[in-house]
Length: 338
Image 1 (cartoon, rainbow, N blue to C red):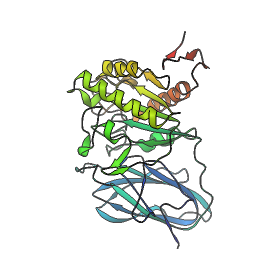
Image 2: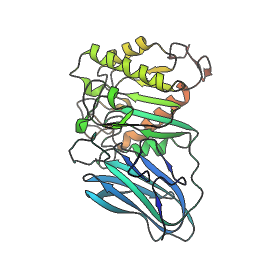
Image 3: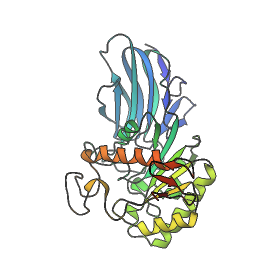
Image 4: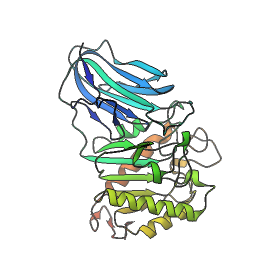
């Protein structure tokens, strides 16, 4: 059965993968990174290396995702087997670090070496718009399914086919706070895969940011300054992208994020103010239907979150001055219903 390099042009992939090795393998440390394609045959597998115990997920056609635990080192991942003869779609996701500690800025968590199947067919057509998501464990939807690490893949699937999603959310990180596994602050890591390796991904159509919940111990001034610096850097690097800047769910450092939006004062940075409470009925300090730990949204919260993000993206990425529903996109980067 033939083997195809991970970088084969027949595959689609999210932008959080970095070409590694001799140029034929892909590495990532960002949960939700995926590779997809179309193949013919009755089985398909992947050769994957992991730097420690890691979690991946795969899907064939419209069947449920299958989650698998990788051991440190070389792994063969069965994506599908015993399939009907014919053509099938597949998707392979990096789904998380599990409970394994360690530095996630020292190299890739997982490296996809190759895909083995009978033959590759025409690739899946990519969505027409690129979306890059930056946030912390809440925005990555930590604990939303099986308490594994994240289901950014569910956001990825939920926003298709309009948006092609790449998640860069990292648990514990903030505008100022260093994230999980020694991940640096967003101002350092948003355009860097790991130490010494810069991303070369193409410009997105939209960026969605929700940061600040982990900055509770930082000053408002520090958060505002880092947010302004990061937003200005993104505006410069991606001169056509709309940036949706959400105040943190729960309200931590809300005033600093609002102040940063005012300082940047760009029509391409749209403020989405969540107020002081979590979306989807989550009450800080109390476990309830929408959260398993009073902080992170769970599976019940997911449909509403995806619907909210889809609405935001549909409304706020419209051209400045255009009418959207009952409102208008203003030049100051806000949405108004008047």
